[in-house]
Length: 118
Image 1 (cartoon, helix red, strand yellow):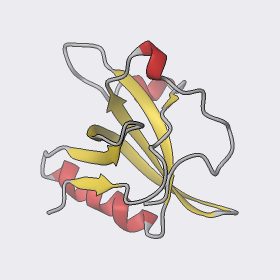
Image 2 (cartoon, one colour):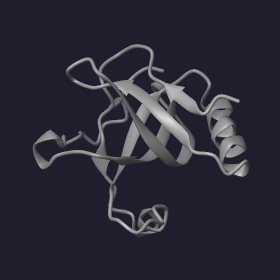
Image 3 (cartoon, rainbow, N blue to C red):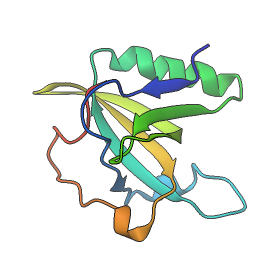
């Protein structure tokens, strides 16, 4: 089974701070991590969410694979996933655990086109 969602084209994902209280409960670990939301355009959002659910059902970790600004491959554990329909097409919302320095964090716009094509 595929345990990753890979961004195959477009810019690196934009990670937004998640202001939702329920998201904090997703990261049950002895250390604190940065939780973030990323919005990605996709052609098959429901299928990707289903892959996440199957992986989690098997008690495995689902990862978001992407290239950072320097072109290096990185991965982030996906903690929750949801797909929504927008005027621009399907969007995949992923709540992920990221390891970022304070100077790497982006101020993401509140527009539905923020993110990358997958």
